[in-house]
Image (cartoon, rainbow, N blue to C red; front, side, top):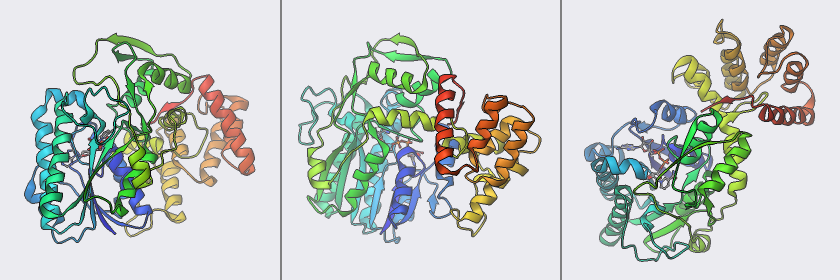
Length: 443
Ligand SMILES: NC(=O)c1ccc[n+]([C@@H]2O[C@H](COP(=O)([O-])OP(=O)(O)OC[C@H]3O[C@@H](n4cnc5c(N)ncnc54)[C@H](O)[C@@H]3O)[C@@H](O)[C@H]2O)c1
């Protein structure tokens, strides 16, 4: 299939592009790389696939530009994720939310109609349920009140989709996402911002008494539900919840993050925020039955996984967060060590080796130990990197905060002792690092 993903540089969109490529589809993306959060993060999100995916850097508020990107391209489906996200900022800038999320969606729908795209899958939100008391939320509940411009804009976008199905026979599917988390999560969202603040010893702001409840959904589960829509042949216009169908209070969430980090939070209590709903809770029986949606990641597994990716406790190996941190610190957001040589396959061993060497040797230069250690995490290979680490250990300089024998053990863990042994070393080191709070924030 040929697929267009709008918002393809964002948190969910960039994962979706990768998932679609993995499923063998041809993919294009639209994104304006705006500064709702650091655009360097969005550049890093697309770095891994931009060689394979044409990215239209346009604003979806510009209807002509959207039409030019869509018409004549023979897309089989559009995943429309580009939007101004977040409840609280929408209260300060309602017009921006209305323009982007309603007019922007209209431009995409119109382009789909004129470009004969048969399928339009749109990211909606659990916030459309407002403060309904009937739990869990079912798709067929009457929605009588939303309590933020963001929620109103998402509900309006759903309505526009239903118009286009009814009037023009366009298949539209709205997916109501329930707080999504995982690697690359938006920095404004609670899991990300709390993890970072707790890790850095800064206070976190807890709005309300901690009893608000959310249905948190792991990114891999969302992707499974989203891509299932590519083969959905049910009602021409339909709506599905995508959540985990389990709720966690804010206090429980903070405790989980504290556990995963091995650090206590400094909590500043604030009053409830206008626009925030007390609870979100998805009934997913319809998605299970009709889409085959099957979420598997409990929050008790997902949070440690998120923390493990965000704070590198690693004694070697590569994490995406680490690669981003390295390249942003050392080279701005277009690091050669993340770039594929023109015309080369980025996944080939040769290319991965070149990137590792750039990071481990040439680019480390005289910037000192910290840079070399980052370069180590960037590397997936052993070889030269291991040798440079051995040098580090010999010179008795600290390695991930370890000295002497411990540093040597950490170096050994990165090469040469077979998978099992290496794995054992790494988990011991990670555990010790967590206990002694040695690690680096790597977002
Ligand atoms: N993350 C969640 O928990 C969650 C929950 C419910 C719904 N959603 C919805 O899912 C979608 C993706 O959310 P996300 O968390 O990945 O957010 P995100 O901000 O990371 O991604 C949105 C992307 O859209 C792009 N974009 C915004 N305005 C644009 C414009 N005018 N023109 C072109 N591109 C534009 C942004 O640059 C960004 O890359 C959004 O529609 C959001 O409302 C997300």
